[in-house]
Structure formats: C-alpha cells, structure tokens
Length: 140
Image 1 (tube, rainbow, N blue to C red):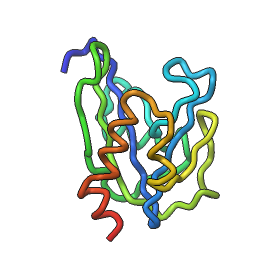
Image 2: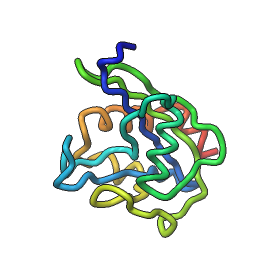
Image 3: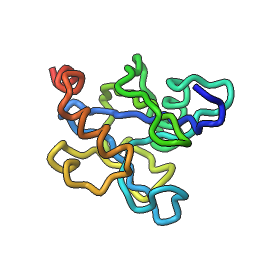
Image 4: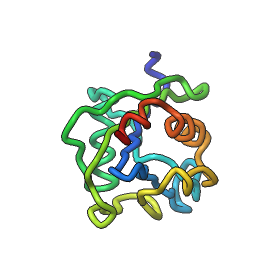
C-alpha cells in the first residue's frame, strides 16, 4: 500500500439486539459533514489498522472492545484513501456511549440504518455488512 494514501480504519460495533453503532458527523467535519458513518479515523504512524480502529472507537465513544476485531472489508476507496472496516459484538448500552466526536453516536437497528444519508464509503460497506453472514453470526 503506497504511503501517499490516507489510511483509515473504522468499526462496526453490534449490540445484542443487532443494532449497529453509527456516528452522525457534525456540520464542521472536514469530510462529509452531516452524513452518517461508522466510528473511525486516520491510522497514525506505527499503528496497525486494527490498533487505529480500537483507538478511534475509544476516542469517539469511550467504548472498548475486549475481544478481537474481525476485518470485514479493506480496499482502496479512491485515489487518495485506503480504508479498513472491522466488526465486533458489544454488550455496551446506549447510555454507556460518550460522544467524543460528531453530532451524535447512537445504536441503530438495520431498519433505521437503511435509509440514512451516509458517507460514500460507509453507505455501501454498512449495507453490505447488514446483509452478510458475519452480521447474521453475531445475532446467534
């Protein structure tokens, strides 16, 4: 992967009911303001994508994933970026989420997510995840 690419990592965190933690970017976001996406951000020098996903989740939500993060999707998203999106189950409840960045950070059901205005990368990835065997396996 060329160093010139912006390297990004995100997390699809799924609660026991199947709701996925989603972030509404605020109007001041440098990219895709007022759109929904997953918690995540830039990979810092020396970090792996998984380490960055864990760090960004903590910084943006106050939540930690105790178990493994599983890679769901990773590819070049345009001429300037390479993104990796992980997923994991959580027992966290909405009242445990601390909004560290964005306008909102909420667990939403698949029915609530499907029509959200999402970022160009998050939209297709989240919709694909909700239809995936990986998501179904988290539901038991």
